[in-house]
Image 1: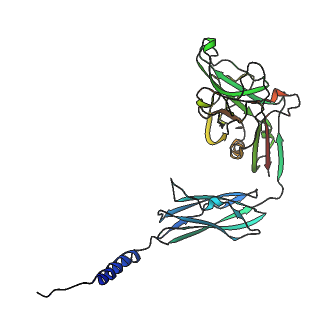
Image 2 (image 1 turned 135 degrees about the vertical axis):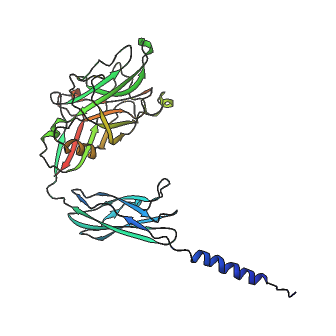
Image 3 (image 1 turned 120 degrees about the vertical axis):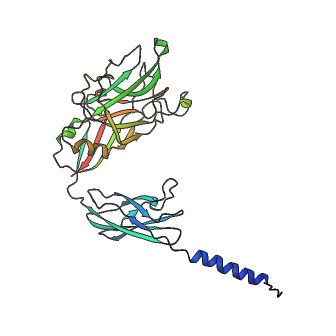
Length: 333
């Protein structure tokens, strides 16, 4: 029998050929993407979200670019992020926009080298922007806290005239009761003066802190707080879905809320005089004025309702000139 001998070099070449062929001869995976719907905005900033419809693989790369426009947009670095949960979606923010029309492009490339491209249009109108500052005082303010402490305040207690409002979860063993919960409601009735068809550019809410006073422990979250082991006092703002009045609202009669577009209120950093500035409640305000007669305000509650957590802010009744009460600043067109 004739023997056939293969050299090591020949075997290596054959192996390399087939390995290379297998890698190069695979059919590339095509990529299709969606840059998102066209937008009409009245701000110099726009949020963008692109989606990979098909062809997604591991190690995707993304890129937003401007094809045309009256200025050069600045894209946030989040336009090329790493997504551990969903590598097929990427978002970014484009700033430095001026009045005019922009064509923006979203591009995604997979690990096979295939690229998908799609564009969308942003029309920016900055002319005629107005600002409305709402900071109601004692007579026009609508803010109240409601509480439920079984065996002590059984949901019928109300306080819409105090110089503060609180959000908390505490225990009342010394008073013969158990765990109790506090939530607060805020309403800016002046929103109803905006004309029909108003376009909200932004809405920022500022809540002012309070000084120490008898009977109030203070905010539970700050450096050195003995309540740190129980978690921080992060809160949320939800849109209220039913009407209420500070003179009559109680825990038992409080209206419902929706968590759609919920806003996080960060935890306090000091026991006293902690002010939270410029909470972005733009979408919540847009939702409130979208349908006339549905401006029912905000409900503020703990993100995790468990003791011992507390935070307090000045109410509209805190000062006659309303300078420390809740303030809502809106830019609109």
